[in-house]
Each structure stands twice: as structure tokens, then as C-alpha cells.
Image 1: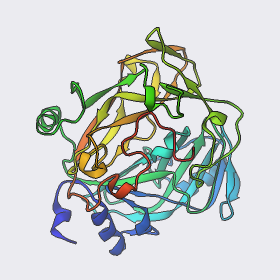
Image 2: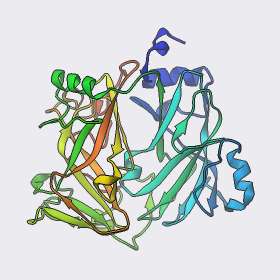
Image 3: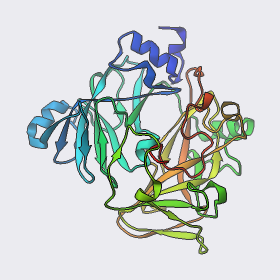
Length: 370
């Protein structure tokens, strides 16, 4: 390994590639590398399961499936339907042997979160979702639960992504204030407390609506729609799956329980090249809703040099209310962004050479929609 691997921080694409070459990350494709993460891919086997589960620290995933949790084995070679409201477990193509100084963290991809598919990483002997402890050696699995739309996926489809981290990587509030002073992280006032606070925009977005003339400030998922093939890009008509929400004179919307909304942050964000970021939920005491299923932001997101334009891209927020209707107001704090230092700057930043679907975004649906 190179000297760079002894630095604290989030591993860059080049450092992940070195792990792949060394045999510590098998079954992974170099084409699936992102600036600070690796897109994981579905393997050939899936199981419909009775309920979500964790193996616990004493069991493997396959042992738990053998306890009667598996209802049906599914062959993904030619594609299969994952039905809304059901829970599935898929063995991923990738397996990993982490050294003792690296940990892993997973999140759904942006496009996965924007179609309301709940995806979590599971490991053998795992006591928590989306976490790989230092020194873990074994297979990786994805729990998949579509919430609003049934989806079609196949062997090789990518629904979640993996980051690898070493040492003290997260910036505290004092470090975040200092970084914002050097390089503004938002286009307005930075609310920094336990990370960078983000608020929701419910005002008139004008030209930033997804469809020309809509002036949409948000979208709400429709029920009883057609399938979404996760591998088809720009193939779907937005209005067949979502209804637009126009500007609210009241300055608020009421979130209906068990409904899914796509909204946008009031702030335009910047992730400088030597940092990565992750969206974290706010305290449950601040509201009866969940925000942002897909939480990774790569180095260069919203960065002017990467997109050839002014700094800043909006964060698209995937919002679902809990058990009771809840009033969400324009400018209300809905999430926090925690910043993490990179162990090395990636050679290719997010959005460079036009390779991203979401660089410079306003309010935008997933890449599956026209």
C-alpha cells in the first residue's frame, strides 16, 4: 500500500482501487468507482423475506435465512420485480476483507432514494445496518424495500454505495466554521450546530421546476403506478409517477402520513475537493418526519471548478412523514450535513466532464425520468 493509506479520512476512488487490486475488495468493478465511494452491485440471488432483520453478533446472514425468514428465492439473472411494501435480501457481487484500521459505511444511491426505495447494507454477524466494522471479512448483502413504487432490477444493478474511512475523519463544528470562512459552504448564512443545518424551500422556484412552466416547489408520489426499471435512464414521464406541488401562499405544506415527497433545500451547497459529506437526520424532537434516505455527497458537489458555473447545488430531500400529519414550513430546519476530510483528493471530482446527473441541480427527480 502507498503512504497515502496511512492518512486519516475518507478513501478516494484511487485508494479504493488499490484495495481492489490487493484483493481486499473482490467482485468490484473499476467502472463503479465514484470520487469517494464504490457503487455496489446486485448478485444473482435474492430472497423475499418475512421481515427486515439483523443477523446479530453471533449469526451469519445465511443462518438467519435458514431460520424460516426466507419465503422465496429469486433468480436475478434476467431481472425480477421487487414489489412495493415487501422486503427482500440480495447477496451482492462484492465481498470485503477490511484491514484493522478501516471501517465501511453504506447509503442508498441518490437515484435510489429519489424513487423511495429503502436500501440498507447487511453483513454477517452485523449488529447495525450500513456499517462494516474494522477487520470484517466476508460477504455483503443489501436489504431492499420499495415503499412507493415497485421496481425491476437484475444482476449488476446498483442501488447502494460504500465508503471506506480511516481514523479521525469527521469535522467538528469549530473546524466546519473555519472551513466555511475559507470556502463558503452555502450561499447564505451557515447554521452550524452538530453539522451544517439545511432548511426546506417551499417558495416559488420558477425556472427550477422539473417540468417547464410547472414552477413546482415539490413532488408527491402517486399510488398504483407502473414499474420503474432501475437500469433505464430518462425513460419515464414524471407526471405518471409524481404530482407537482405548486408554491404555497400559506408558506407551508402538510405532510400526509405514509406519503412520499421530493423537496429541495433552500441553501445551495458546496463540497470542496478535499472533503466529502453525509446527510444526517435531525433530532426526532424537531419533527415527525424522515428526510433524505440517500446521504452521500462527493468531493466537488456544487463546486464551480467542477461544473464551470457558479458555486452551489441544492440538496434534494426525500421526505416521509411518520404517524401523524405534520406541518412543514418554508425555511424550516430539516437535516444536517456533516463534513468529512478526504484521505486524498480524488483525481476526478463530482460532476467533472459532465459525468453526473445531479451537478448544478435545483429540484430534480431521479435519473429515471425525462
